[in-house]
Image 1 (cartoon, rainbow over the protein chains, first blue to last red):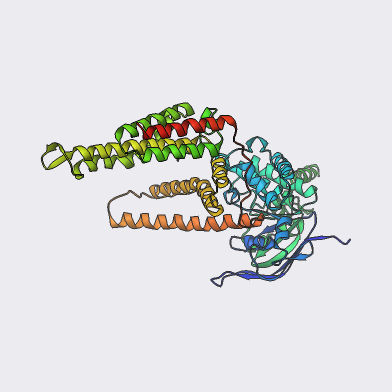
Image 2 (image 1 turned 90 degrees about the vertical axis):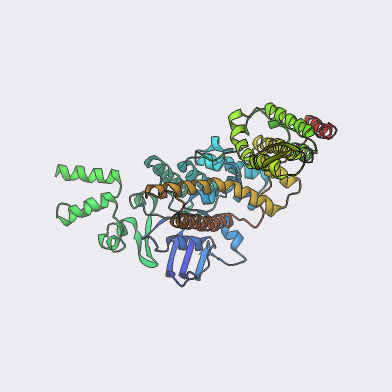
Amino acid sequence: MNQKMAIEVENLSYSYSDGTRALNQVSFSLAEGESLAILGPNGAGKSTLLLHLNGLLRGQGKVRIRNKEIGDESLRWVRSQVGMVFQDPDDQLFMSRLEEDVAFGPTNMELSQKEVDERVQWALKCVGLSDQAAKVPHHLSFGQRKRAAFATVLSMRPPVLVLDEPTSNLDPRSRMEMVSLIREQQRNGTAIITATHDVNLVPLLADRVLLLNRSIVAEGSVHQIMSRRDLMDDLGLEMPILADLFETLQEEGLYSGAIPFKKGEAIGTIREMLHR
Amino acid sequence: MSIFDPERYSDLDSPLHRWETRAKLISLFMLLISIVIAGGIGQALAGLIVSMLLVLISGLPLSHVLRFMKWPFLFLLPLLVILPITAGGDNLFSYHILTVSRQGLQLGVLFMIRGIAAALLALIMVGTAPFNVNINALRSLGMPGPLTQIFLFAYRYIFLFYDDLQTMRRSLASKGFEMRSSARSARILAVSVAMLLIRSYERSEDVFNAMLSRGYQGRLPSGQKMMIKGDDLLKGFLVIAAALIIQYV
């Protein structure tokens, strides 16, 4: 099947001004409607890679968004196509009212005032903050600010979403709300790239995983990558708790089936084991 | 203790809150000028009375007003103490080597009254409308775009800067740091403040990236359209009339 590509990165390398190599010959692609998680230790270049996808950093190599290469002429278009949610919501909420922040992107896209207003209402409804529209950002809770930052990008209705640690510092309920929000966008056809340390959420968030440590260490489906203890250990990453448990059972010869990653799958597997 | 939030009561419903912002800013600014150039204590007192009356009409809670006013008061207090003993003039009374002059005391009282009245008006300006509405009004009155953005971002991020400052203070305290008048204390404070500045610089870069990623090209979107009605003009007329009357007290 010939899928349309949302993002294509070819041999991307980037060094900071002090000479530190942040990315080395990184290549990968993401189809429209697909969800990819980027995992890696601190300093692996995850955030640096994400900044390239919106044209905020320009390294050596090629980055194409929906078949168009990022360059000076395409920059404005690229930014209307790739919505980027930063790790710290306070970086993203810079206006003095939430509704102004959510309207910022659509207004820069030169949409009519009517459409901007509609998009603001829609985006705030998606993240459950319709009643907070007139609030000052610093009067919102951290969880609300995270969702608000998401709304500021949703209002641009980008076909590609780039999320930097979307669940960091959130309580369990807020984390699950954020996961549902991300999955809902994927169901609507949005391609999503998520950089995260939250290995337990990766199976819920993504179809594919890319392990990054300045260059690509491994890439594949969630099952292929996250059940590899050797790969995860090498990068100092933990396996998801369910995968870790069943991998241990496999190592001890107590289990030989496929590694479950979701609670429902694990419950089914445990029931089967108990009935044997 | 939390940072003072001037717009905490900007959603009240009073004649000053309902007043169209541009008309309000221009009228109050003219009143402020009238008070600041007041030459006599009588004129300044009249200005202070008008300012207090406006604060009363605004319905701003007394605790909010007092919390704001303590800073201008503390700033002006030294003038009230220093001017009477440094400015020359008629000798009012002497105590040891200190001589209090009539003209110096009058000048100190005049500065204090003018300052308090002006600060009250400033509180009404910033406290009876949301900050973004005030900024939009100033932009609509011709304030340059870059200046508007500086005000807007300074206001948005001063609260985060304050949070960072509090975190740093708690961090220092948790490691047993106590402020003393020593070179070591000064050095630790200097390093901490430098770290705050570096963090602020890094944040400014991140904020700029976030703006660029959403299509920022150097201009902020303009706010909602404003309209001056008849009662806005009437309020403006009354305040400007008060400003003129003060000059003839």
